[in-house]
Length: 152
Image (cartoon, rainbow, N blue to C red; front, side):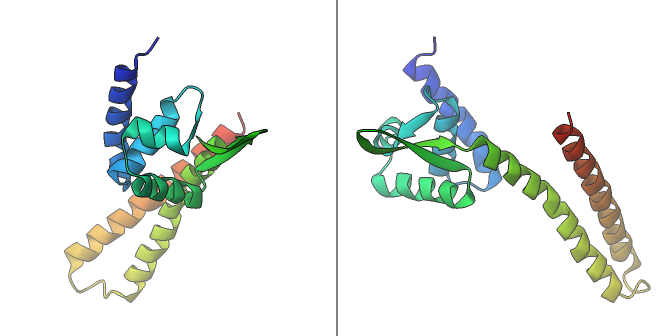
């Protein structure tokens, strides 16, 4: 059984990793805590107390994830508190959407290449073309992977 100290360390370790995805330190720790929490839902006060965070920063973090759709909450009869938890289905959908943004970025590169003179700054244009080809390749592979995953 995990101790409080080992859970705190795991939340910290996961939080550091999540910060790489443009989350603030507190946002990262909130998400990490809800990933490892048992049960997998916690009240606002539970989150704030575990993380030793202020009410404002905890609220801002929860609101970001609620707005993003990766957190939801549940209630229990006779209890006025909301218990926050990760919405796994919405999180998966967000990951799919993020992956599909590669396609949108490919469109930006294509439009850029259309207006650039291929005779000027040849090396730069060639590198842009290489990036576009790579983007298209990644987009196709990700699209295939998503389809395969959903059809399994």
